Image (cartoon, rainbow, N blue to C red; front, side, top):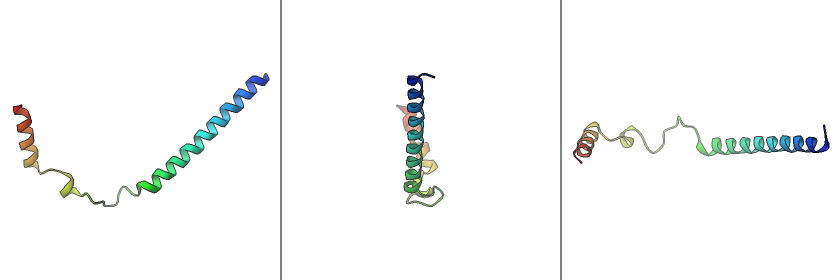
Length: 65
């Protein structure tokens, strides 16, 4: 291989390693900040969804437009 090909290959390898390190850092940050998705938060089923009657009324109103 020529010198330029070796330099290009080394640059590609360095770029891959840097991307892997960055991906790992981002993944760890998100996992730390996001917490466990299975834990209850401030929103539960009673506050997260509209009652069926309210959904029906909204749908009917939107269909009249």
